Image (tube, rainbow, N blue to C red; front, side):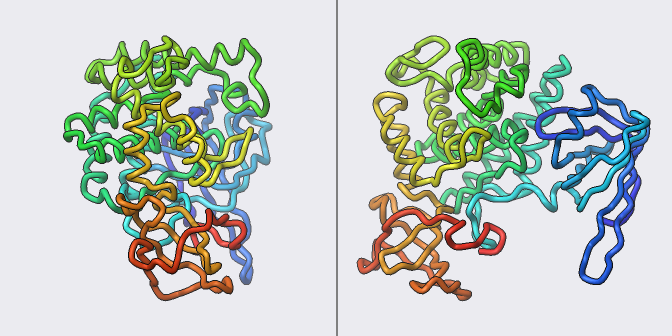
Length: 413
């Protein structure tokens, strides 16, 4: 981005509202040959809600102007804090948030996706606003949240058989943002497969977007702890469903069944969950759906205490919890819709080639429709080659493929 000046800017890192400044100045770095030099930035009239260290330890910044334009400042480094209200530093890049965010998990360019990028960015902003407002004791903008849910529902109903694109976190502190949106997307995908009417899907989406709102006041060191929680820490974690429900109870414009998602998404089908040890169908339908989506996205997302699982391995864990943790009907619907190898997964075939799962064959969950990415010798295939394993009996999936093994990313597949 070229040099610019932004007035009256709110500053976020991850899901934390850091503060505001009267002026943010961006001076684009020079380009010397093929090398891009770092750019400089300046905060004028900076007001921080935390110690300055909370700003210094972050990797990326999110800026929101008074006219609701949003920017991401990547790989920034604070250089001068002599005057706490006027801080300066360097960064490698600054772009409109819509241009750079979000990335997708394991999806090649050009594939038809369920939720478009603009919808994801709008959803990200809505969840950001909810968290910021609750942290500061303000009411939730339920009109905006409900409208975003309707947009997500419309995307899902418009392209139910496309690849399900989930948001990938930029840093661990973005987890609450992106996880809520991913859980809403997955839950709506399940709800559509169950044949729920649009009105039900609207409430389901709203409830799932807000399901973790109770985590807002839990210390970040507990949420991101790299190691086993103490009994006291675990008790704090287990308090978030009830806290979330209590927050939503104060919010007008959200249906009771949407609010109950926050309360019930950690209840288990066999009664061993929390906070109320609810069992079977006494758990609301929305709560049972969210429970599946919540665990699946958590397992397939990097966390400080473990790396993300491949979708196939996450599916195996979910299947192991059938009849115990999850409603068997909902989980079976999820598996039939996603297959054991969900759309967007990379898989290896018996001939040694690697493929991207495009869509499921509901009548044969281990024989989806694929796009071949590399040939058996590992060379990338530029032309589009689709294979329907239900029709081509000579090929079958031998297991998931790691992106690291292929030396590729979701950007250059």
